[in-house]
Length: 348
Ligand code: ATP
Image (cartoon, rainbow, N blue to C red):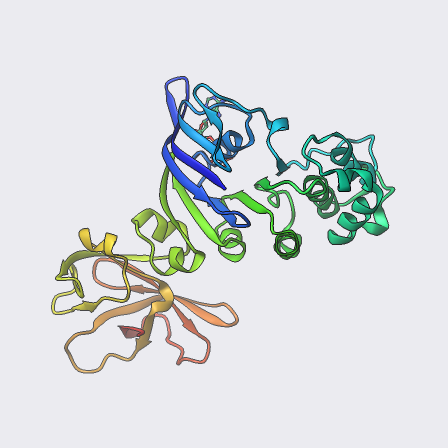
């Protein structure tokens, strides 16, 4: 549905996006994830039509909508937008917000335009605001305002919904609730969603695919499961979830010889092939299993430096000669005390 071909964006001499190549399928929920300043909003603005790429081309259904020469403006693209700031109009009620695009957007199907009142009702039901239809924004909570912004964006049935950190102004509990709400709406409507966030939990929980960005470039595009279980770069492994990085060298494709632990050989635990060209072994805290050291041989020994009870699991910091390692153990496993010597094994 959307093709982004070799797109770069410069602000003066600063390059905010570097040769981006991406393809979004119809109906997909794609999260664009990355730290502040990596170019997420710039990418969204290019998709919305607020500005042109410096180089490259964006196509929607095969038609060129943005390049250094072409700019189809936002009102001529069949898109909806939801921002972090809600951007509501203080003089309009909830139902007037939802009605507005039905009257004024050029892509609204005649059927929807003709029966705007029932479409407003349907959308307000979908976002759970039917009982607040006549309220003004000043009479709504943060979560309710965000629902109005969402309802306004989806009412005209856009083929593409762009969302820029839509939940970041809400408190933690409401954010969780709204995640489900947005997933529900996506399931009901089947609209293609591009969802910008710096919150890895949000991206992992909601998206079909995640685009991880760093300093204007794409690091990895994959499903949440692959991004988490098989990160391709050091950046992805540490930006999405916690990851221990052991220095050393790969011996063939299936064994890793860590630098600081003589006699230890670590097996391949499904590390992505990209990592095997380097000198790092990535391992998640929950991929370790702790035990009392027994005899000698192929085991990595350390001392418990910190232990934190977290309800369902215990988070340990294990000090080994040169490095401290993060380890997570589920609560059913034997508890280890600070100062205790432990062996770290790999869960298979
Ligand atoms: P955040 O999560 O903080 O919103 P982001 O990933 O969305 O960040 P962008 O807003 O796309 O990042 O900005 C990418 C880079 O481009 C940043 O370094 C930013 O300072 C720069 N930038 C953005 N807009 C402009 C502009 N109009 N002029 C100059 N530089 C800009």
